Image (cartoon, rainbow, N blue to C red; front, side, top):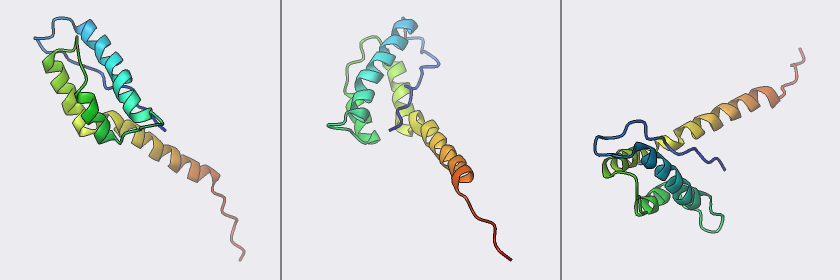
Length: 106
């Protein structure tokens, strides 16, 4: 299982009066929500289901605007594209290094 780090809030809207609290709350809610929904071995959710449940959670310090921007990122699946790329590259590397082809006899 590959668990991605939460997508970072790179820019806060003007309505966000506490960017530090917003970042901290986003981080905590991400791991308590998405981490649980994706990695719970008793009830793991597919990405789409995890996002659906995540959006229903309470976001106390995350401003409405910041939350909406981050939900757009989640809907695009950006949070996990790096993991898919990493796995593909790792598999390609392992195939190149571990697959042995004996020299053909002529």
